[in-house]
Length: 173
Image (cartoon, rainbow, N blue to C red):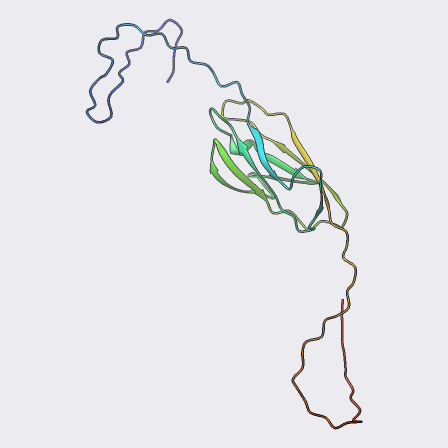
C-alpha cells in the first residue's frame, strides 16, 4: 500500500467463507501504520560464542531473522577469519528459509589446531535497517597425539610348539 498523509482510503474487510464485507456499519477508521525501524538479528549461532575444542572442520551456522519486512539476502556478508562469504561471491554461503527467518550455513575451510576463529555477520532488511555487526569466536581442538596402530585381526592358524613366528607390520601417520 502507498499512503499519502491526509488521503482517504476505502477499505473492505471480508469474511473468508462468504466474502461478505463485515465492516459495513463502520463509517470511520483510523489506522496508524508504523514503518519498519528494526534491523535484522542473529540467533542460534553454532558453534556457541567462546566455545573451545571445536573440530578443525567446524562449519558455522546461524539464523538471521527480521520480524517485519524481512532480511535483504543480497546485503548479507559473513566473514570467517579473512574470507568473506556473500551471495555476490566469489565465495557464498548456503541458505534456506524465508526473509523473516533464514538459516545461513558457511562451509568453512579447514582450520588449524588451537586456532581462534573470528566470525562477523552484517545484514540489513528490505527497508534498509542495518544491524550492528554480530561477532563471535571459537577455538579449535588440540592436535591429537599419535596413537599406536591397531592391527587388523588375522585368521586362526595352528602351529606346532616351538615354531618361530614372524610378522611384517607397516604403519603410517
